[in-house]
Each structure stands twice: as structure tokens, then as C-alpha cells.
Amino acid sequence: MPRTKGRPGRGSAETAPTLPPPNSADPYGTWPAHTGTRQRRENRGDTGVQLSRTDPREPALLVVHLERAADSWVELTSPRGDDKLPRQILTHSSSLTRAVVPVPADGQDTIHLEMHTRRGWRIWLHPPEKIPLLMREVGSTGSYVLRHPGGREPLRVSQHDGSAFSLHALRADFRPGELLCEGSGAFTAAAVTPKKPCLLYIRSRGSWTLTPTGDPKRP
Image (cartoon, rainbow, N blue to C red; front, side):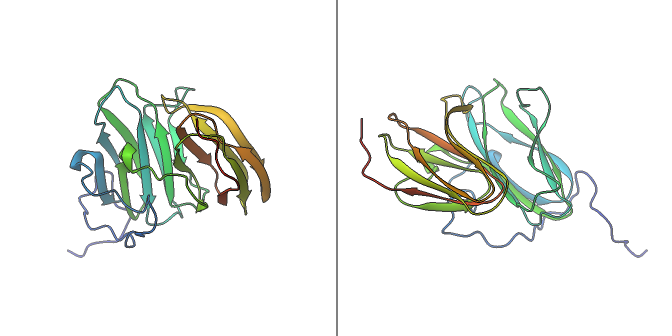
């Protein structure tokens, strides 16, 4: 009986994703070596999927890669957002194929996602010690998280395209804290990093660049 072509069903058994080879120069190109098997998954097609936290009391950093943006979206269904609704971390209308998402702790052992795509996908919980350090100019597209070593350091913040942009210092629970910079469309603005070490969270759907412009005043 000939097999008809169609959209893979939920929980599809296909296990041969065709994602492009990871970019070794991108800290979020693929999961770091020694990432646990329960903290990473790779597959294709529509499905619900879960990742295990290394500690249910600690927040986590989720990274999602899609092979194709068209007709694809991803929902974080647990933990839910502050409005108690699932969070769309990659949307149907977006051209982005990667998202870097801080996920607060909720006391549960697992993080749950719904993958809506016909193509391949790759997801993992990024080890905290592998979060890239802000030491020189950094540029990327879409959401991103950087480690700030501490010290008030002036930054030049540029978004080259896209819509809304924001740069926050993350609190210890991985919720957005101090707003350091915001803008919309193409813009360039100045910002200053916090005095204490923290993680910096970029929310954007466009391409952007952060450039340190002076010597940091370390605490």
C-alpha cells in the first residue's frame, strides 16, 4: 500500500531531524558537551515533549531550535507565564528559528513544551556555567542571555531591524529585573550594566549588537 505524504502526527516516530549542522561559533548553536540526556531532545514533527530540570528548586535556561520558521511555533506549557497561560516562545508569524528563554523554577521536576512544526527541532536546558560571558562586542538575532561579571560598564545597544527590543538584568529567579534599555525598530542607545554580577536578557525579534564602550568599574 503506498504511503501518502502528510504532516507528521503528534508523537511521530520519525527520529531523523534534518537540522543544519550546529554553528560552533554560536554558544547557543547546540547543546554543550556533557549535557544530560534528560536535559536535551531532538526529533521532528508535532509533539508534546518534556525536559528534566537538574534541580526543581532552580531556574533553567531553555534553548529551542527549529529547522524551519514557516508554519511552525513552540509553546511552553509548564511552567506557564505570569498570566497562567502557555508562553509562545516562537510564534507562527515570526521568521526566527531559535529562542533562548529563562524559565523560573516552579518546584516541578520537568519543563513541558508543545512543538508545532513539520520539520526537525532541537531543544535543551543550557548549563548555567556555559552561558556566554559579556566581555566584548556580541551580536545575534532574537532572544539571548549573557553573563555579566559585575561592574558598571557602558554599552552601546543597537537593533538593526525588527520591532520591540528590551534589555533586562535577570533576577536570581530568572524573572526580568531592572530594565537597562528598550527601543523599537532600528535604533542605537546607551546603557550601563549593573554593579553586581548578573545575567542579561535580550528580548528581540530582530538583529542586534551590544558593544562595551569603556572600562568597567568592578565592585
